[in-house]
Image 1 (cartoon, one colour):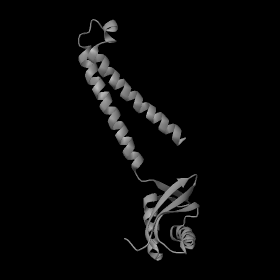
Image 2 (cartoon, rainbow, N blue to C red):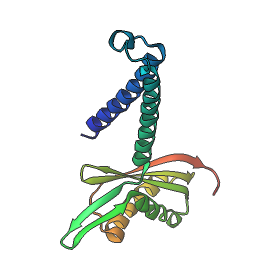
Image 3 (cartoon, one colour):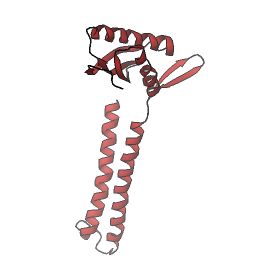
Image 4 (cartoon, helix red, strand yellow):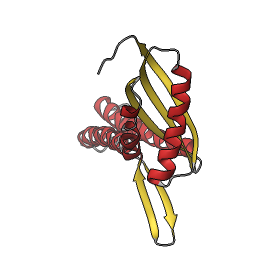
Length: 173
């Protein structure tokens, strides 16, 4: 459904921009107007501003939608008392505070992705080299699940994915 909405929105942007460019070009050169509006000498001076306004409107409309798409997403939970909305950014920051509990993790960044009434948590980490790398990642996954359940009351964690972005030989901040 989201893909269909994005496609229709993209089509609307393209239509408004094409209409604006068409008004501008046709009014500037007068190709299409000669047959229909030969008695209106001012059609050129109406079409050019209309074309420019449509183009400007289309660009600002697209920019506004991009800003809305870049905004923070929220997870919504309903209970008998009402609804609770938790920012995915807030959850990411909360999970980022787990890194100091693992001395071998140099840096960690968490992403929260809503997926069909559940969430995926993707952890991007830089870690110090060592033979226990696999075990640390498993413990980290378990700790994230526990923190989500006990600390936030979120039980709908589908996957906890650990992506090791860099293995360093020494500690870097």
